[in-house]
Structure formats: structure tokens, C-alpha cells
Amino acid sequence: MRRYRRRRDSGALSLIAGIVAVAAVTAGLFFGIRALIGLFSGGRPAAMETPTPAPVVPTPTPVPTPAATVALPEETREPSAFDLYQLDIRVDPENNEIACVQQVSWTNRTGEELSEAVFRMYPNALTHGEESPVANWKKVFPSGADTEGLQISRVLVNGSAVAWTLDGKLGTTLRVPFDEPLPDGGTAEITVSYQLKIPKGFYPLSYSATGIQAAWFYPVSATYSEGKWALTDVAQSGAYPWFFPAADYEAVIRVSGKYALCSTGKAVNTARQGEETVYQIAASAARDFAFCVTRHEKSAEKTTESGVRVSARAQYNDRCRDLVNDAAELIDFYEDYLGPFPFEELELVQTTLTGEPSVHAGLIMVDTALFSGKKAEMETRLAYAVARQWLGCSVGAGFADDRDLLTPLAQYMAYLYLDQTNSASADTALNWTGAKTMKDIRTAIGTSRFDPALKALCEEFSGKKCTAEDFAALCGDSEAEVRRALGR
Image 1 (cartoon, rainbow, N blue to C red):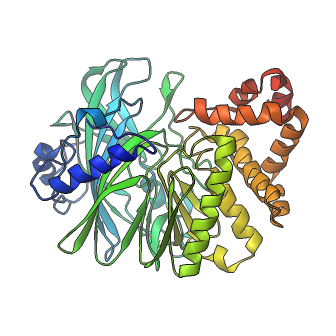
Image 2 (image 1 turned 30 degrees about the vertical axis):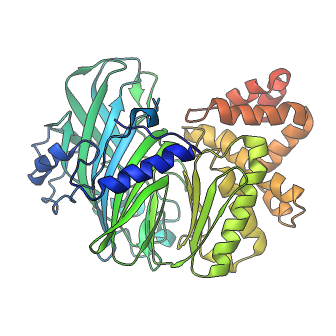
Image 3 (image 1 turned 45 degrees about the horizontal axis):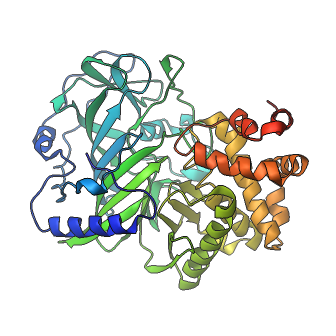
């Protein structure tokens, strides 16, 4: 099991890239599961009876030939408190489909012995027409979401096929049984093979004239709280369907044709194999993994003072430059208040959405309409999106916490940046209720208490769930006052 060093360990990353480049010319193992690939060529086992039976699915197209990888030297490994997701993804931009073999080193952290692991599968929620939990359904999918959700061919636990099941009102809950109960602290290697037809639309999971946006496309571990799985089938927000727990990711993404890739994480190697470009990507402690396959050829990049690589792809050169320069300035500003940027890279890509950017760990999808709209709208939305890299992508793991604390904090940071840079857009940001609430709290308790509490929140709760109560406690003597202001 491999662990990449986090953030700006440039020596380790150079070593990784060199090792992977040598391995790319040899036959090897893909994330330690090559021996399992043959098991995916057959049909799925008979599913156990559930309230909503798992659908009968067709035999998938052949699984992609694994990319060559090697184990990293011992000195480049780093223990992690997070599950490791290893994804081998083939993207077919002509037919707007992806095929994936996904292995998860899943650790039982519930404090109890478990007979199963549970995953959520958001694409299945899009198969229910206007009953699907998507805000502005008709605007997002004018012709409906033409997808059948995730088509699973087989699930393995520690290399053996198991009788997986689906249930839930929207068929979004995947249950993976264990042959023997898994004790607290125990780890199981869970492998899922699936295909997904990407729907046409203006959504973070869709395709359009600009390419494919793939967010929330894979089975993600459900959260376990108060002795049970949290299995709501209702999207809690128009922006995020569920709140993914932080995890480490290693991905191989193969893209055919003349497309570029933007994604969560850092590309440690890129190579051409025939008609495909193969990207090998690593990310640590990220709330979700997302990528875009884009037709845009124009690009720009810049490195911030602290060493964060910022890059952008868009329709025109000036758009790329503006995105890169603005995002880099925002990172430099926010690091004084929020601490080091939580990822090694930030990629921005012009997409076709419905107005607002879509924010993911290390990736921001910027809607084309923002470039042609009011300048204040673009400035505030981008300032908010970059703040969300800390407050929402690195910190947090629950809808209520995000609504009550992290979104208002990100809104306030956008206002603070625009106000201190004398931007006319500051008033636009202050129209957000959350921004005004946080501004009032900071004024009431003083920067000497508010600012250290904000930085401590990002440091102490990186990769963890946090609440409004946690932030109030970090404010020390002002805890009661902050609680009242937040309605706690």
C-alpha cells in the first residue's frame, strides 16, 4: 500500500515521477490488483434479496489494461489516517462513458464490529427524473438525465467475489458483506468494477460542448454515526449531493482523443499510449475526487509564493491568465488567515454549468456564463470558491456543519479579500448572509480572537468533521458570544 508525501515535498514527488516513468515501459501491477482483473470478466454473483433488488446489468466492456506502477521506496511512504481509493478509469469522450476498477483499503473506524461496509452511489439518484435530488432539475438537465447510473459487474472483498446488494429509495446504497465480521480497526480490500454513462447537461456530473465533468461519480464510503449508517437519499444542497469523508487517492485516468485533463490531486506522470493519454494522479486527505475532460486547448499556470502550482484551461488565453493570476493572489492572501494551502495544486477549468462554480478538492469548475456576466459576480464567486478549498474541501464532513459554519466562513473570506483589496465587488460579497454574520462576529470579539480561531480550525480539523460549536470553543473567552451569534 503506497502513501505519497503531502503538499510541497518536491523531492519525494520528483522521485515518484522518475520511478513511475521508468515503470511505464514495463509490464506491472495496477495498484496491487492486477491478479484480480481476470475476475471482472464474468457476470456478477446472484444478489441477496433486499427491498430494492440490485438490477441485472450487462457484462461490461473489457477492463482497461492496467498501467504499470511500482511500489515506492520506503522513505517516500507516509502513514495515513484515511482510506485509500485506487481508481483505474478509462474515459470514452466520444460515447461519454467511463469504465472503472476501484479498490478501497477500507478501515472500520466505527468503534464497533461490522458485518458489512456501505457505500453511496450518487449517479443512481439521477435516474429518477424530476424526483432526483437535484436543484433546478429542468435547467440542469433540459432533456432529462439520460443515464442508468452505476452499472456494477462485480464486487470483491480481499480478492473474493461477494453477493453485493443495492437498496434505498433511489437505489443509491451499496452494501458489501464480509465473510466474517470486521473488528474495529480492521481493514478490508474492497474492489468494485463498474461503468457509467455520463448524462448530457449543465451539471458537475454531465457532458456538454466543453467536455465531460465527472464529480461524485464513484462509490464512496458512507458515514457511520451514533451506531448506524447515515443513509439519507435526499441531496442536502444544490452544490453537494453528499459530504464525502476525506480520503487518499491514487488514480490512473486514460483519455482517448485530443482532450486535456484537469483533476483533483497532482499528476505524477503523464504518457501517451497509442491513441490514449494516461495520467497517474495522487491526492491526500481530499474530500472528494473529481476530474474534467476538456476540449479547451488554451492554458496558463503560475506558482504562488508558497509553492502551490495554479493552472487553468479555458477558451481564450486571457481567460486562462485571469483565472491563474486571480487564484494565485487569493491563495497568497488566504494563507495568512487559513494556513498553508491544503493541496499541492489548484486547477481551474472553464465548463458549462448553470452559473456558479463547482468546487472540489484541488479543482474548480468555472461556468462560462461568469466570464460574460458582471465582473463583481465573477470576482466574488472565484474568491468564495478558492476559500472553499480550505473550508469545505479540506475541513468538514457534514451538511449541517457546512451550512452553519464553513459556507459562511468561506463567504466572509471572499468579502475580506475583496474589501482589503479595495474591490468594488466587496459589497456584492457582503450581501451573503453568512458573510455578514461572520463579519459581525469578528467585529464583536476582535481579530485577536477570531483570526487565531479560524487558523486553528483549518489546522486541527483538516480531514475531519467540524461544527459551529468547535469553532466557538476555539474562540476561547468569546465562546458564549460566538455561540449566540451562530444560533447555537
